[in-house]
Length: 183
Image (cartoon, rainbow, N blue to C red; front, side):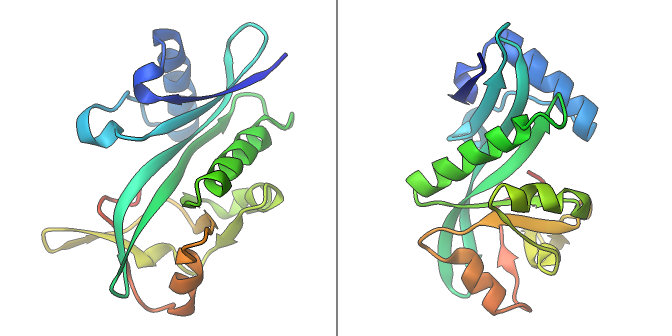
C-alpha cells in the first residue's frame, strides 16, 4: 500500500534524503540538499512511498515571502521538485493533488515554473499554466535583474488573496521576489 507523507526538512531520514537527491540529480541535474537556517523555515516535502518504504514520487512547497506587486505584499508557496520515479502510474498526480489540497486548506497561493511539455499534466491536476508571465517574476541582486531562463511557463493555484488574478490583470508589471525564481 502506498502512503503519502508531508515532512519538514528537519524530519527527513538519511535514506529519504539519499532517494530525493538521486531523483533530483536524475530529473533536474541538481543535487538535493537539506536546507539550513532561514532557507529551511517552512519548506515541506511531499513524499509518496511504496510498500518497501521507498520514495516513488515527490514534490515540495517552499515559502517565498515577501512578494511585492503593485504596492501589496504577498506570501506565496513555491511549487517545485515534482518528480515521479515511475512515469504513467499517477504518482505525480497524487503529489500534485496533495499539494493542491494543502494550498486550499491553508489559503495559500502556489506558484511554480515548468516547461510547456508539462503543461497538460499540471492542468490535468487542476493547476493553471500561463506562458506569458514567466519573465515578470524577478529578483534584484543589487542592481542585477534575475529571471528564470530555464523554464517556459508559470504554473499556479490561486488562493483567497487573488495574487495571480491581480498579477495577470497587469501584464506588463514586475512581480518582485525575495529570492531568485529557481525553485
